[in-house]
Length: 168
Image 1: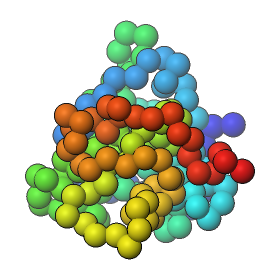
Image 2: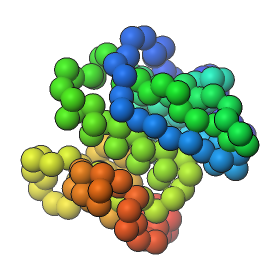
Image 3: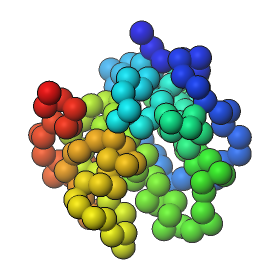
Image 4: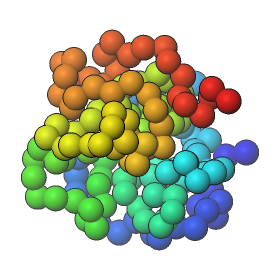
């Protein structure tokens, strides 16, 4: 059953800052994206739902909106015509917006499309052990790549490792 706005607690999406994010998804990919994601356990960090023409991404614990994509039909799929980062979190920093676009790409690919996608670890941020930031942000344990590596595409060179929750 597809996630809806009523599937989880959430705050409405208000103002946002544009992100440099562009993507096209096939009809099959869009069908998976439109299913969304309802958290099932504590490690699930995101609540994601589609309400045409928007795809909303909210943090699961707080219900705060983080991203909103506007999708438009194109050929046999959809294209992202606008990507917004909630003004609650947005920084007036082009590098931060670029990183958020990479993170958004990761979230859609890994959580919704279930593609083995390296997490774009932010540069210059220390962590006590590998994977801590990724688990905190995404609730996943996929391979990491420094933001901007592999020609700027987090999926380049992705391994076929499964997310940690698929091991049990």
